[in-house]
Image (tube, rainbow, N blue to C red; front, side):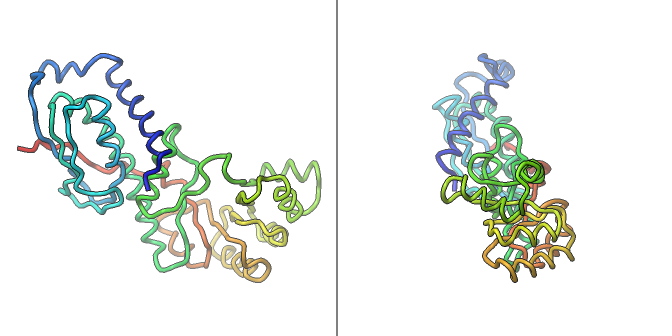
Length: 290
């Protein structure tokens, strides 16, 4: 689940995080309070219920600082947490462990927050055919790790960036139709001709009229933007009648309070920007281990 690309992104972020904290110098508080030879044992402990993500990063952070520490994970990313759940045991140079504490926790609390919120959406849609997806609404530099956290929570990744799938939105269409005219189905055929072979082609619509015009072109996915439930039900009916192979994706205004109702319309996918831009951090801490 944690890919080589995820690891590369993580190592760059860890280096940046440690540079922010240390500026090429040292942890002055730990140097003044902790003898260089002192060793200790710490536990990483959840303070809240949730889903773990980012545990895989802990040894990478420690290895950036020293080779005199050891981390022993007790739980894999994706594990359910309760208050008091011990996530990992750390041992070694106490200065190093305390220097690493905030960097480790920044990653764990952020990513576990994303995984936890994703899990709640997935649970709310359980029993339907619908997948819960993220979006590109991620913090700059953190996309790979936030999307990893979505997977830890049981969600599915949408396109990673602008390069790996076609998503034709309203402004693209407005310009295209101004220049070329024609139907939305013809716009789909244009994209199919010009896009790399095998690339996913998705179009956004905001009305049932646009959907009906688009479906004969047979895109892979149609994104239904901010449609209320009655329109989503009609969109599913139209899709089933005109192009049953096309996937339908709902997006816009999706909340925990309405995601179950939306999923029950028969929609295939629901994309939720809040998974990455609004997930609250999960409370996780370092505890002294006697």
